[in-house]
Image (cartoon, rainbow, N blue to C red; front, side, top):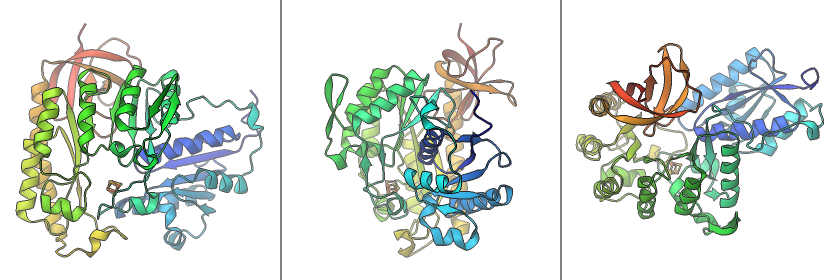
Length: 443
Ligand code: SF4
């Protein structure tokens, strides 16, 4: 097809979380539908779009740096994403950006692109895959089920950036998931700000899926996704009571036995000051019950250390919790005094030195737990999905059901066989170093 001679080219820099990545994918789908081509390099692009993150101060700095780099390398830059809400801040350091739009403002981004780089092709002749364009490898994809959040955690400014919870109709979500599977996706990662609250804002409205009416509820969504025959991984789930109902689907193998629950802390008084949703004192009991139903359950979580007012006792409660709850994968963030967050106004902010020290102690405990977990895997047969050849390791990089891409561990497969990306096979674990396992195909 004679296209590249005339098609205007757009470069995309995508920063931030998986939700921002999904935004970038949607923008790319729209760009391709309107006849734009993508450029992997600044030099080949007629214009560069920077999809920013504004969650933590460190992410804001990274976003501003990325805008500066795109301006000096290319010169024509449009900014979108979470930091786009703060136009003044961006203009103060980068007055030459062409346009600034906020998160998930797909139409505004497209208008800005059209204004500064008019499309030259007839969209009717461009083929867009049914599943849209994706930035993740072909075998896994993120599925965004809602935007925004109804919670008001005191350290977080996401609701002020992204607004209240806005769930997508369940048939739209399922249709997208089905199209992804048809396009070859073997693993779907369900994301949102608060996955277990799905449908609350639309009163769990039913919509027609195949020959049935299906309500927009977390459990129905998990059950229907579980029928697609691919790995389904649930992220950002809060321990609301109805989460118990999804555990049997994990035990049956319909949904991966993996829950990403951002607990953030374990001390009741810190959780209260954080204004965390579903904060109850019986979490340990609940987790034990989940494990009795689904013994292979992996729990990933993230925590914040050094929150204002956190005492040594609170911190030790947190360390005890990750051990007692058997948190399998634990990420740890140092508290940051984010501009606009309610927690800035709390008393008793901790010195940075103390925050750093607690972070180190957390990481020591988490490393010890990860090592023990890794050793316990030696000799076990596990199912893995292949992500591709890892040149540095001289082995195939794969992931077990306990490992989400980018954030968890890796299983290195040593074999002379050729393994395709997205292949799912059973391997026997031979060695472990923390969350990195080395294995060989079983047969
Ligand atoms: S649940 Fe809390 S931390 Fe998560 S997006 Fe909502 S307000 Fe922010």
